[in-house]
View 1: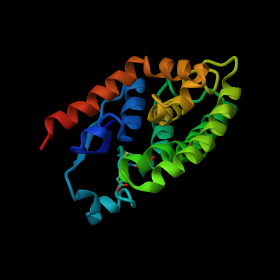
View 2: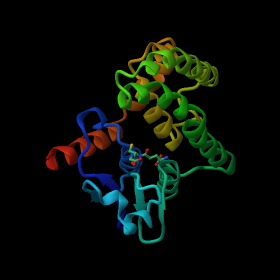
View 3: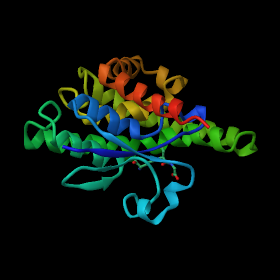
Length: 215
Ligand SMILES: N[C@@H](CCC(=O)N[C@@H](CS)C(=O)NCC(=O)O)C(=O)O
């Protein structure tokens, strides 16, 4: 099967290793599937042919011989369906995996981004430090709930699944923040996810792309 994912040819150092094509790369590495890269140089994300593939001009987008799609959550769910190791083993497991992929993206990621993006994209603006405690409180509530769910669990859904790929890449954004460090169980969960060889393979592959295409 020929699989292609989109990725930026290069991003500034602060984003390297964190661009969301890492989710697709990680799932593909777990599945043992090779892939080609459709690299986007500066400006290519606005080209009509790319917008026809990814309407928001973002990465990642994905295609194989059967389907073309976008959104990292949808992409990893599709990759799971191609893989013996990652495919859901029951309807209930499939439903739980979908629920946790969406929860990570919709209930947790916005609170993580609230906390980290203002400082990155609005450095030095007065409102950033005023907003920060509010953002921390909102994220703390979500992390407390997640920690409650993780009690007695190593993975979100019984065994490692693509839901853990999405949750780990979300939590990784606040890995060094006290709000996450307040939950040793979540720190241990994140460490468990990131210790997987497939994560390292995905990370190395993304960093390699940026090294090869450095301006
Ligand atoms: N909801 C999308 C978000 C993708 C996303 O935010 N991608 C970023 C890179 S990490 C991007 O392409 N940013 C450029 C832009 O938004 O124009 C997904 O999960 O696939």
